Image (cartoon, rainbow, N blue to C red; front, side, top):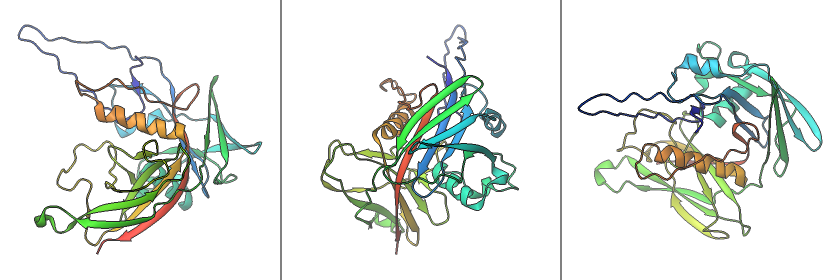
Length: 313
């Protein structure tokens, strides 16, 4: 077992408590090999954004300072599309343009305010304005860093928008200010369509579904479906307000970011979320996150995005 984790993607907090009436049991776990971790995305109409960090030991400090120290600098990062290679430059958050700040916030769920010059928080991405994503195109990622080579390929699938959004009241009449968001969706008659969703409430960032943010058409291929859509939540929060979780409020303006993704991209988020949800469970099934990065960890994924807005009255 590689006892390391990525401080941005893998919000896994392990707590092992071993005790007996006679003596304490102290375990010394190996740190495992340090690996490079990629969180990279490209969607139609926006430049590629790649975050490159080092994995850190599971039991290490996860402070802001530790996160900043985990960023990998001076790597050679290129994205190839239609036979042309584009070199990505490293940019620190104080130097982000407003457009890049919005893209990073939207894709990674980081509040825009934390990415501004005076926030005191440094975040680094590799990107280029010379390349904008296109629906139906494939994109190869190549990273060279001190003799290590990482590669991956992704596509931006055709758009698969939702048909409609609507809300229904909370089942408890005493919670009459809360609403359940529903969506209807018609899946194309081709197997393998996959979706990742995010929600934005008023001026909040886009957040993915907390427990499950991805769907696949394995059981609904070619069908029309209607289901509730949980409100997205920031990852890694200390606790969940069970009274408010999944609901929206009267007066909220809700925007759903509905992103078509390819199968390797789907399998990454599906396996990662299963790992997070079963962490610590004595009956949980062992799970390995299915990265599409050859030579490292993480994800290089394309998004074919549509946006849908509803005002809850």
